[in-house]
Image (cartoon, rainbow, N blue to C red; front, side, top):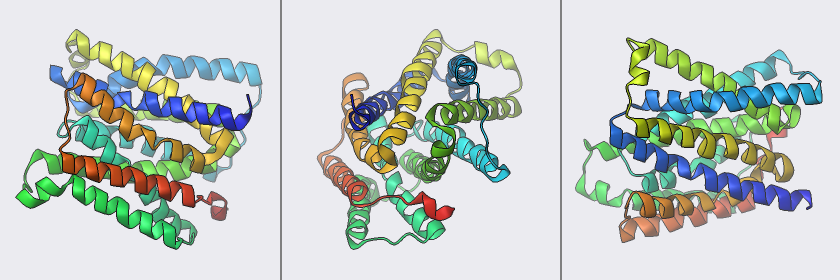
Length: 307
């Protein structure tokens, strides 16, 4: 199988497996668990996989990673943004809105990548990209339309939407960072080290927040089951798939394939959570998906300019 085909398959599988995360989070929230506890359980279940694979890979390759101090700092920031801060904001947002809406809102993160690339790297934005950006935000307004018309400013919806929008911003920063680091480190090493950094950050967050570690062992048993599934099915497997897809076919092509993500999440939410979108939200969602896909097709992120 040629590298392009491999990269496409990895991207599709990564998108599909990542789509299950919001479903497992919503199922776990039925048992009265707070976001940081659920995030910590996810990380603790994932940690043995990443630690074991990191040891195995270091023995197999037998070569050290040579990064500058600037690159190590960027790795630390990128890991915290992508696997800790973004995850925590996402978990917080899912307390207040459904998995389908979460995925539609989060899906606009490529538009933030465009804006940040323009600000940070002075990357020129083409006319077709401007059009795609405008229509993606029109789609987002349509998704929010019922809440905007009813002026439900104090409702949980806006709190949840705010967390997910912040998550989209931090994930965009993570996406820019990993395009810089993966070519230098390789997908495997980048994923391992990033996840280990994030695991440590979540543990520190939990220790600073809770009164006693016994709280971690007092959850209902389905919470542990969903956390374990989230760790393996929604975290470990897709994190490697997506990193390898970026390495094989590039971030632009990989992000185009990720357009399948909202659709798969909406279908899973329909099947497992009995969630329904209104027809106007479906229209807005289609507009977002089409616009972001068009944006990803017509644009390439030039991270090399940062050097």
